[in-house]
Length: 366
Image (cartoon, rainbow, N blue to C red; front, side):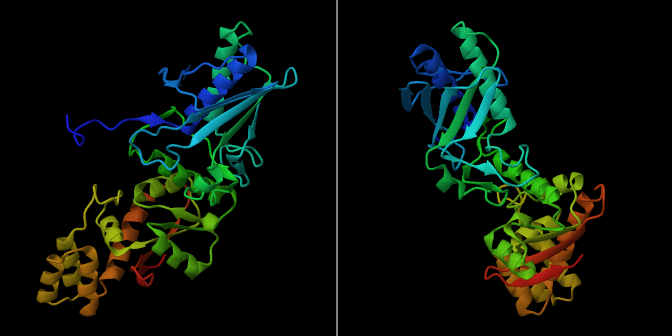
């Protein structure tokens, strides 16, 4: 089988890595020896093993680290060292989590953790607690979650977090420890979509009246400059228009501005909800028909139909004085309104078409 034909390799979430590190550290705390590799059980029943990349046992504190392997997924945390330090706590206190270096702290409401808590999500916490109970049972120390402090950290996590949504979600100081199944499915984009959902949750919880969903940095900057909204009111939509709209339908905000490039928004106007180039294409024939409806001469419409790219089609329309970008904005708004039609309350939707220089060239107002 060639490299191109082989199945994409799955990997492990930061939550699974933190669980393995915590289990190894706790076993060393109880027995004086680190299991290497360390086996854990994931929520779905899989039992992967993890090699230890760091160990330290210092009195009543044991530390173990695991290098995250995200498989073939382009995960920003691939190769990061996720570590856990476990130490005894007061009797009856149970498992208490703290953020080590490189793990963030929650500062805004709307996330699945209270403000002030370390950004170790509920599912990884449950995985760690279950793993510690299994370790305790395995060495004859009882099966209940033990009384320990578990510190989770990620080497260089604060720097890695700059390439994630954490800042705009109000998670400061580092990364989130994530994952509900423990498994990373390559190119599922589940982390990106989860961040979109969390961004909407934060906007709702903080009473935002207006949010921006942008397909990229240029359109994000243009919309943000227009309205002066803080970064916490901006959703990095990327190609996932459907993920934004379906979640907003269930968790509405009063006002939504969708901002994007001409090509991506022309796909949305044609009804595509996944704007990635592998899953939707610019329909130049449709753009030519729209241009003709707007009064474009036959030769201009024909040139648009034969354009090299969406940008080329926009340039041809603009040179002929045909307001094609405005028409695309109206079409994209109509599709968005259709997707939001079942929302619990009305959402005012506006669409901005932004060119590569950051200028707003098309607009459909709410």
